[in-house]
Amino acid sequence: MSKTVAEVMTPNPITVEPETDLNQAIKIMAEKQISGLPVVDGEGKLIGVISETDLMWQETGLEPPPYIMFLDSIIYLQNPARHEKEIHKVLGQTVKEVMSDKPIAISPDKSLREAARLMHDKKIRRLPAIDSEGKVIGILTRGDIVRMMAEDS
Image (cartoon, rainbow, N blue to C red):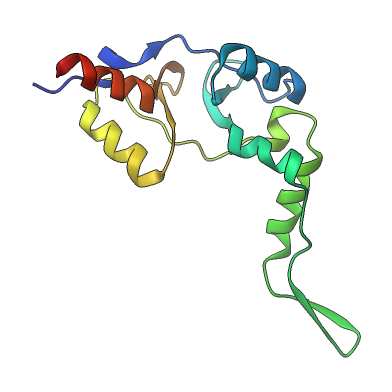
């Protein structure tokens, strides 16, 4: 019989709020040796995720969007709004400015197989588990799944 997310997830994960100072979030991730944190509102509801990938923008800087000049006009070859979001990630001082704001989450009663497939398909390392109200109650990582596989073999 397949295990559920609730049986393997880490309950009560460390979370941050959107107004958390970015340096504080980075320190938490480094000290706890974790690669990402769920971002929750004042009620504990999931509103985003901040990960090492989001933080890479801080160090890599920003490339200007591709454009062409035509009759003294600039024509952007990509959506300028996307570039504006990238600027916020590079210059961000709070978690809200850097986090991914479309988090993928799962219900704790789902099967581990469903969770693993979702993580694989979406190429994510961690999957917050939320209750029926959207509150974060746990987190499932790729490492959790591998450890469970090792125990079962």
